[in-house]
Length: 129
Image (tube, rainbow, N blue to C red; front, top):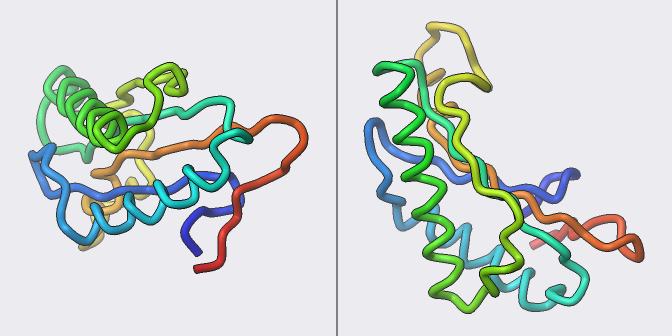
């Protein structure tokens, strides 16, 4: 499934980077196909940047902002109307998906969440690819 039940996709990033991998670009391109098909139903797009714990809080807030802005720029370059982007924010390390020290924990935290807000006619963009 491309979107989860909350009409969101998660794009992962490498450590200390705002560069998006080809695999994540493909995932974003698939989301753009759905966006273009359902554009009239989408009333807003929220972009939230996140990081792992590594680094200082201020650095991580900045890195989360850079990641969110990277996705915003890709969306704009792909033809998404900039006024559809209703919220862009960085949470840095504040909203970890995995707060353990387990192997791989940092990987899931280095992300951008892209949330699609829909008008009341449609409950979701849930898309089975």
